[in-house]
Image (tube, rainbow, N blue to C red; front, top):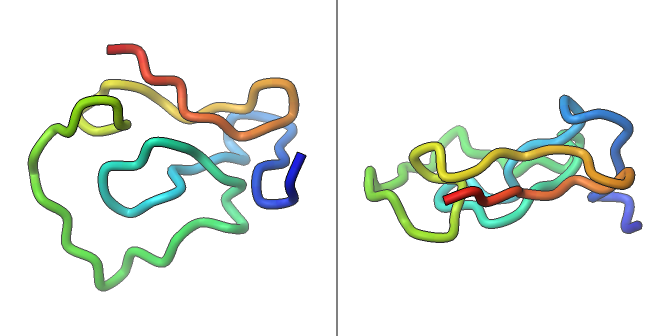
Length: 67
């Protein structure tokens, strides 16, 4: 598992992109979103609008897209 994806629990993980994220990384490798503005659109296949969540699966941060 790559260092940016390693985790022990769900709380170790965050979205890998500021907008329309499709994956997850360890929170130590989180993107800097301070000056990023995202559209309000709910893009399919992303974590947008509650379509999924980030978690730790087999010690690797992943995005679980549910809708």
